[in-house]
Image (cartoon, rainbow, N blue to C red; front, top):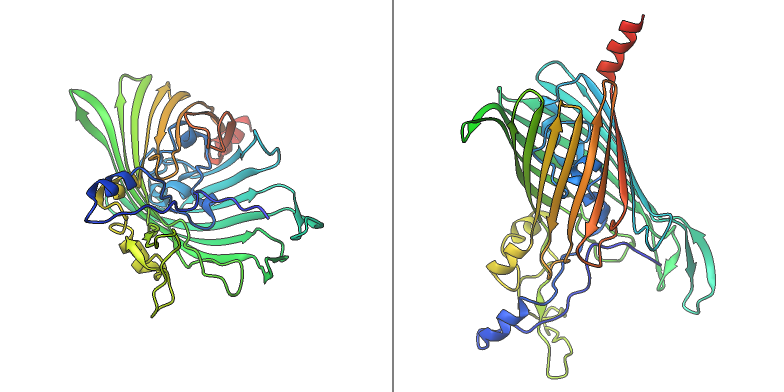
Length: 404
């Protein structure tokens, strides 16, 4: 059976007060945070995909349901729809992909509703038993269905809330290692805030400033068997800003940055004996923790704990923050060129890549494309092209009225 995870297994490292040098060395070892349904964190649209996966404070559009639902209250069109397609692991497997459909509808000047559907197909997989004999074919898949609402609170600030239903079927119900499996389901919520001001001046230059914060995938743990320990959803905090310089009536350039952190407990370092075997606590029957905290905690405790449970201390907590940065140039509000960079610590997954893309906006629709240049060997989107197509129903309606 194949599963897609965003991390790798912990490599145990000894950290003690007696040997500070060992603690410093442990900071260089892998301690990746893993969660269930990591497809929820994949950047679904090509615009943000070209900006190094930044989007919590970019200008509102039909893809705001993923990045920050609060942005929808400030969208300048009455209704819009976006369709995106992203190949996945295309260099290894030809039929894994992510499809995303998202849209919104304004409810007057101060509020909006949105909805989205994210579908992740893992392709055709042949299952075998312990002896290697085939026992069936299956097409594992996952999807998430979202509904959201955004409301203005004044001229510059808005808030938003989204509800999410998650369905993940990775095994088709077959027995795995003697355990009955099932599809995993869960419910989660996103909530965020958005600030925008189009009347600022920076170094004597007219500019627009946006800031955003979004908590996503806050919800119940998920399990694929009746007796297994449940796994955390990829609960996540994203904070960012967008500063756009208005050069003249035709040219503008934006600088976008996002900071991203999983709100999930960090795996601890477990104590081992002289032979390297884990030491079991005689009272609890669980492995003894040498450094860090117990990750098997309730959801709220896990969120709070995630800010201070790294075995390597504060320096490791800082390494758990991913950085996205991008630049976006617009000419005449019709043609866009984009460049971005994504950075993840080498001990937390080691994803580092440069992104580039372009956009073309016409009266009725816009087309965005992006390309990813991986700086490491473990990015499943390396050297793939992604596409997004957005439709503006308000301009479409006006075009029809003009034609008539």
